[in-house]
Amino acid sequence: MRRHPVLVACAVPVLLAGCSGSEPAPVPTVAPTAVPTPSEGVLTPGFDQEPDGERVPDASLSPADITGLLRIEATSRAGRDTCTGEQLSTVIDNLDAAAGHRYGRLLLTNTSDRPCSIEGYPGIGARGAWGNTLQLAAEQREPRDGVVTPGQVMLAPGDEAVADLEWTGELAGAESEKASMIAVQLGRGQDAFGIPAVAAVAADSGAQSGDSVPLDIGMLTTVRIGAVHQPPR
Image (cartoon, rainbow, N blue to C red; front, side, top):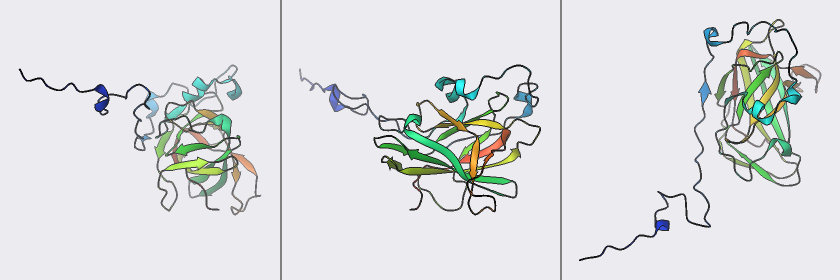
């Protein structure tokens, strides 16, 4: 009887994650996504009225709570070198406005003593000043003119990266719930972290340079976030 050769399991890397001592198969980066504005019919009744009682402060939220605020997740899988919120100083700056649109950028600075990396589009969400999870219409796409090719950005200690932002549509007014926290996720599967929902005004916008103002992001606002890239030097 003719005998067929025995195939060693390591010779089939497509089917198996790998053999002992090898790296696991990488999870591919997913395509940018978007979630639409929900209809008011699916929102909790009374969402547009400030509730009675005490609100849990933003500072008391757990990493799981903040991750639960996300409307869309990051497009790149978190790895061992992916930057975390603890390694970064993260603010929104360069705030500008035009005809119902607001523009800014997420500025990420590596304040740690070791390099880290970010790739693709961050995940984003928001919490309102009344304690609600804001049901944003969120999109991962470039909000400004010009082309940004998503790719891996390496941040040495002290280096900066940015992701452009735009929000428009249902902007929060004086009587509605404004965002108090923006949730940011840099790698899929990683805990999100929160930053205050304020932005420094752009120097050329006509306002006092460096002034910080609350973001008029509300329950049904459309928010677009671009890919992380390094700003021109």
